[in-house]
Amino acid sequence: MSTSLITNIGELTTNVGSADGDRFGTLRDAAVLIDGGRIAWIGSAADAPDAAPDADEIIDAGGRAVIPGFVDSHSHLVFGGDRAAEFEARMAGQKYAAGGIRSTVAATRAASDDELRARLRGFIEEMLAQGTTTVEIKSGYGLSVADEERLVRLAAEVTPEVTFLGAHVVPVEYADRADEYVDLVTGPMLDACAPHSRWIDVFCETGAFSVEQSRRVLEAGVAKGLAPRLHASQLGPGDGVRLAVELGAASIDHGTYLTDGDIAALAGSATVLTLLPGVEFSTRQPYPDARRLIDAGVTVAIACDTNPGSSFTSSMPFCIAIAVRDMGMTPAEAVWAATAGGALALRRDDVGVIAVGARADLVLLSAPTRIHLAYRPGVPLVDQVWKDGVAVFAAPSKERGTENHGSLAR
Image (cartoon, rainbow, N blue to C red):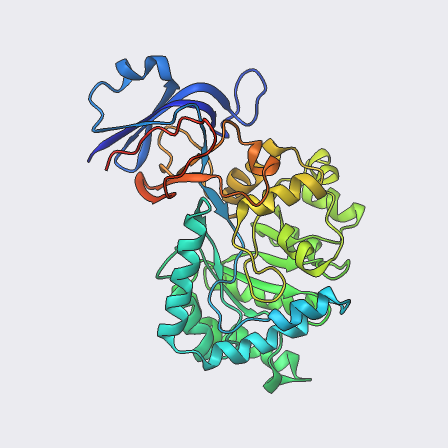
């Protein structure tokens, strides 16, 4: 296996806490050695010639920043159609509701496997270009046994982090028969989807599924070997947090409306709260107070929730900028939440960090610090991306002031 040395890194974010109390593991004038798809060594750039004298490839970061690849722990990438008209209506004052999902279900059912596969791979390329190297993908736009099975099967072609979300909403053919639909989800649909999935999820919300129905879905998934996660408290307060903590869910996602009791329960648990800034941006709901959550001891992740209805963005840098501007996070906290936090939400310890033995998923920024991800919103700052030690994206060469961009040997 070949080795690659990235050196002259101006600021390296490792997310490995240090003895001086820096939980973000920030190193200056650093270098990283990649060997066989894993991180083999981290240290000072001055020590790199001795630590890696025979590297096959040397990449000069030219004083730019390197961060772990983003870990997007909540997305819905397999779907047909879009809901641009719905977005326009919301911007004109219409309130967001869960029912719009059904229009995407109709478009998804009408799409062929090849159409869905091509679109999915396009989203993956889009994410890689913005620094996302690990992504979780949910089903939920099929809502029939055959369609949910094909959505998780297609998702499994591009990621091991597949979530069965048959309990997204009740489809029109089961209107006023929600309990019967839950029977389908926990029976034949789960049987068909579990072989392609790692996770089980449910939308525990008014207009979707009750706490009792959500419990049935999650417990059936656990019995099939799937690990639980949960959509909850997006449209209003409810008991979803209590259920997630009770069942030991890896994450509860959204958390727009949380009570003091919810926050205390999360702070005392191993359940990650995954915030989805793109949703509040797109729906004009209030932004969660991440500062309050972090100060209370809640473990917070950030994800895009890429979907055609409530958050049609795949940009983690954009979500980081919102989290800093409108949710009270520092830039370092937001980057941590989008990397190490997302890894915790997926119960992974091999991604989201730059540590010896971890996967070599790295992002080289065209900026001297991670602060610029929030400081320069909307600007494409991702220069190069490595996944498992392989270069998977390089930005087109262009002038950026007087910065020194180094080179990538191929």
